[in-house]
Length: 399
Image 1 (cartoon, helix red, strand yellow):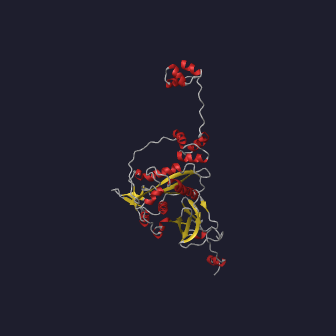
Image 2: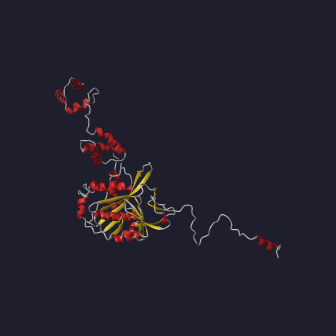
Image 3: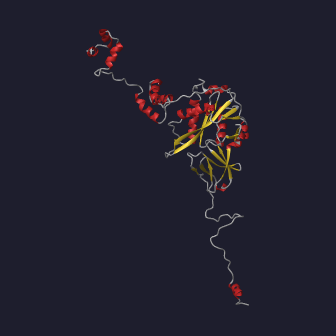
């Protein structure tokens, strides 16, 4: 009571401590329990005007402190990173650390490859999906990635070629998961049975394929972590118009963020360590370009099914085999080596992409061509017409 009385008279904590012989911490403790004590109003924080934005981004799944710090800096925030980090910490989902054993590889020795599944909502609000091809050079941690609508054998080979071109060369071996386009199965003693088309492409590109042991995905932990890095740092809240647009954004992000920031393990920038990689040159395209082509058959109405969508070609090649070359930002369709149509990739799977002059010159309403060797349905029986005198002869009225 004496402490509270002195405090009510205006004495400071130091003066109350001297008058009562109690320590200042003891004086503070009893004053904190005083319901009548006047509490100082909290000072406004530089982060206050931006907390609503941060809460909205966290609700959308964006929890990376560095990214959010740079975003609010562009909006006028003048405080430090620590305020942002401390504010986000209790709002992030808890993580459970796992113990792993790390190993390093020699420069130019290995790259790791995998696909990741990324969901999004199209312009109509319908859920859609994209596949992300990722390659990481194990020594430098240099990363290449591209989105696509499929994760089939052609997507694997196309991603390999584009990654080698991006890095300026190829490693001696590439490590894969046991994905179906690459690994067909295993023998009784555990030897890998490679998919023939993929193995031919690997030999043409000049690298040795390797496969992880089944159920040991952590063997290629570098690419697994990189997919997670893209999933949490690039993808949340991203907006794009089509496949080409999102790949342009991804390519810019690789060049300005992912490959130029100090890596958490090496503490060096991947772009700088790339200079120490001992990569081998990519063989002449004549050896491997055939593996980027897929063969389809043109439907009767002049469409080619590819990547879950339908692409129009001239009606004159209906029923013909046609090759499809996926160049990333455009698709080329050839019949007997002649380019007959070109389309940008469909914005969403299930699209129908028509050609402006697709049916020009198509005869409408004319007779269907007759095909030999086939039966034909007719509207009525074919009855022979005879002269009336023939019937009279048959009846015996005319001799």
